[in-house]
Each structure stands twice: as C-alpha cells, then as structure tokens.
Length: 403
Image (cartoon, rainbow, N blue to C red; front, top):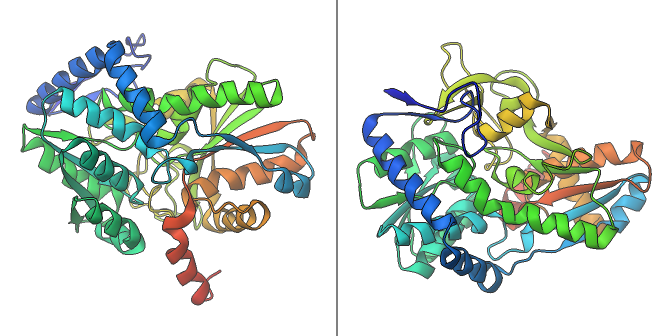
C-alpha cells in the first residue's frame, strides 16, 4: 500500500494539511481517485453544473431549509436562545440529500452507470437510492446487519426506491463494515461510482462532501443575520463522520466570534467499546484511506465503538474536523445516550419537532449550555435529520422499560 498525501509543512489547495486526510491507498485506487478529483474540479468550476445542482436543491430538495427559534424551549431553560437549522425539512428528512445530488450528478457527468454507497442510520442510503432513481442510475447500498435491524424502515424505503441493499455481516456489522463492503465492490467495478456519505475517506471525498454540504452553512449565516441581526454565539452539530457538522461550520469558520462545537456520541461512557467519540477519546491513525483521529484497539487497528445512533457509530472522523480541533478553531465534546434521549423527548414535547437521535446529541449539548448563558446569547443547532426513522427503536426501548 502506498501513501499519497500533501506535504506536512503547508496546506494544499483545498486547505488540508498533510497531517490530515491524504490518500493511503493502493495504486489502482489512486488512479480512480485521480479521475474523480479531475472530474470534481471541472464540475465545481462549471456554472452549468452548479446551476443544475442549485435547481435540484430548490425544486427537488425544497431548499432553502429555514431556521427556527425554539421560543418555548429557550424560555424553559431561562438562558440563551436556541435556534435550529431545519435540515430535517429537506426531502427525505435529512441533510444527506445535499451530497447525494451533487455526487450523482458528478457520476453522470463522468459517464458512470452504477453507483454504490454505504449507510449507517439509512438516511444516506435512502437519499442515494432516491437520487439514483431520479437520475436513472443502478444503485447498491451496503448496510451493517445490526443497523438494518434497528433502521428497518429505511431498509424498506431503499428497496421501494429500487436499490439493492447488501448486508455487511463481518465485525461489528455496523457502519465501518458497511464502508468496507462498499469499497470492496467499488474497487472491482470501473463503471461504478462510490457515493460516500460523510466527510471521510481519501481525498477528494472529504473536500467534495464539504463543498456539497456547505449550502447548509451559507444559508444559515444569511438567515441568522436576517432573523437576529447578528451571527450566533455558537454553531453546534453532531459528529459521527462529520458531514452535517462540516456543512454548517463552513458558513462560520471565518467568523472568529462564532464558536464551532461538534458533539460526538458518548454512548454509555468513556470505557473502551462504550462510545464512538473519536475526537474526544481517540488518537491519530489511518482508516479507509485517510488519516484522522480514530478509536483504536490494543493492536492499533480500528476499535470497537458504540452509539444509540446508527449514524454515529464510526471509529474515525472527517479529517477536516481533526484539523479544526488541533488548530483550536472548533471544540469537540461528547453526549451520552441518556442525554441524547432526554433531548429527543424535550424537543418533541416543547416544540412539536421530533429530532433524529443523531441531531439530539447536538441539541443535548445546547440544552446543557443555554442556562449558564445570558438571555440574548444565541445557540444555533444543526437539526440534521428528523426522528421518524428512530420512532420504532425508541418505542421498543420504552416498551422494555429501558427509558
């Protein structure tokens, strides 16, 4: 295996340092990535491509998604005002569609006829399947066997949309194994395009996902200025791989007065195998062709992780988040399952909005922060998805008396 990464002493043209991301891949994969990089750079510079994508954002996704002031919740907490960026209102219920539209348009531009994707909670899989149906592409989705059980509704949705859903049955049978399966199938088929769902993987994937998700941050920045007359004191988002977080962070990263806070899954606690907090509790390492913080086992390989949220149980994190952490520009904290579940019910019962369990992690940290802040402070939470997909899982926990 060869290493292809930028020099460590200065950032590359995309703003990444050699210590983050890069390409740790065999030569045949390097050639595929080079082809993808060239196509991506050409597409992003093409006004026609960007116009077509923007038209789909408006007429297919329903963008722009609004911001919403949680007046009831803010009053209850008695401190900072909590606002939501309502990505849950997008077509299919999450931020994932922003990225799948961009990548599938790029696949068609490259002449690819088949696409493959991994999925954890199933939202990326559903978005990929829907986009493939829209654009006439064959679609295969890889999903961990455990995740297929706890997100069965999304498995049905993917199949209704015409996708072939392949179970990943090795290891922990969750998101990492779904990525392993998808990569194996992609490398074996030159006509296949890999629609990677998060801001991870070898270059250019983290950069490409950030570019397609940056619409969240650019909208949110303008909307907060219009609604509040100023920028928020902090922007918060959950972090698994990190696509929704890097999307909203991109709108504020150059505003020094806006804290960027990523919220990782703390699971049952800090013991090994009980969480998936790569940035808070991990160390640098290479996984799936990129260098970033990750959870390791005793042998230095990708370690066991856990989260109540199927979309957050990945043992590493997007390399741009690692860069932001080490640069001190972003803060990363963790929230336990219990705290996330409490936030899930709190938003549901005070604002009539059922959040995804992933997004509930970010909301939970905002709920912890708000009471200690002045009433004119503003916390903006990226509500990256709606909780429809989690209702059966939470209902089962309620029936068993677990919550």
